[in-house]
Image 1 (cartoon, rainbow, N blue to C red):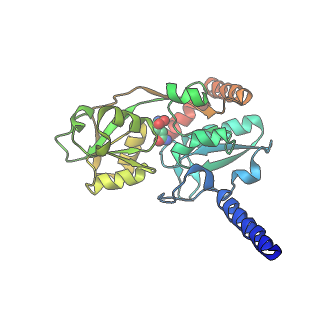
Image 2 (tube, rainbow, N blue to C red; image 1 turned 45 degrees about the horizontal axis):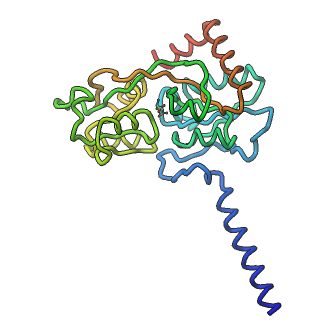
Image 3 (tube, rainbow, N blue to C red; image 1 turned 45 degrees about the vertical axis):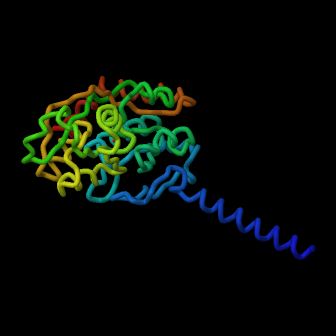
Length: 272
Ligand code: GLN
């Protein structure tokens, strides 16, 4: 009987260890599925730096050029990264970037895995219930991308019955679901894959933020936007509601960047 007890305790201990090992892997908490095109996560993970007063962790999804993308050196680069650098510099903290799924950013703010989400993130009523946003720093909106030789689809109103690609958890995803039946909407973790499916005629159109649409069209070729912009969206830096001090500091940096002309320089650098 004693022997049985010893075995039972041993088995329970091993089971607990295995379960915990699974939970604490770096990608464990945000539902990353590993199906990403550029599935790399930056070397530094929050386990090492979380709560480190010398570092500030930016969460982003590096599939959204020119706001954030992987450059030739495979580093996360872009307009949002430059803004994050300015924030980190002003605070005298070292910038750490966590590249994760867009849909995981809010949760990552809650769990303090990241300090701020800068990801071309639209300020929406729903998100404001979950997180705080800085003053808006970019004015965008959704548009429709189709193949260059497409003649039938001239605007979002012509997407009835068509197969539509969106990025999961984005405002493009929400807009699509408000207008069209779910079975016609394909959600991608990386919209890069949506563009590949458009080019290979597996979907008919993509709904996406206009500056990113334009950049992808430049990169991929063979497609175009139609119908102009059909939503109005403002991008903001998201922080946890428990961190109003950081929000104030971020707003101050954004105001300083605008006043000093550095903000316009960044706009020219990334959008012209
Ligand atoms: N602006 C869109 C949103 O906030 C898309 C953002 C993104 O894909 N990075 O939902």
